[in-house]
Length: 242
Figure (cartoon, helix red, strand yellow):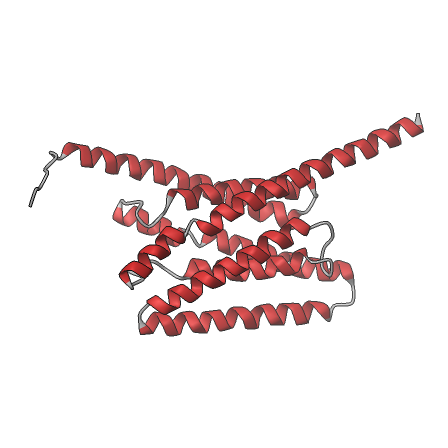
């Protein structure tokens, strides 16, 4: 009887591990979609040589989040979080490239502001890494970096609130690409499950919030996109041959 219980226990743990890996791989795939989704925006920025009304803050938040979560996923802080390391290392590379492009094409005032924010990100992450390594107790170090990564993730998921406000004000989804919102939702949902299967509250709590915000963004997109289409169809079609 005891041997059967042990076999069932290990089989259940093995199943959880498999589903955790599946959720982690799915999260990495959807995250890649999230990372490449701003490319049309930056093609437009480079074509017009202007950042227009686009904000660089979401990319700053995303870079900070990726670097902190990358540190959290390392064996020095947590265990069995390889998927977090892979997704955040790729994410940090993409965000840094976007920030550089933004700085190159924005006005002088925003250029200075973005450079200062970028420097602050590297200083902050350096202090977090150095400070956490000074904590001798592994559990305390895990809690310290875990709470920071959780707060960073929540701030990153909250950053689209700036775009949501713009969408409501302008009644246009021009500055909220559909695939960005969709990828955010899918990635958050995948890592929410990944955190649940890994029993890691520092992963599933912020990603649960991100899943809810992703649903809000998709709902707003559907609402304003539909209204925009309806308004356009009310106007007569005028074709100019000039």
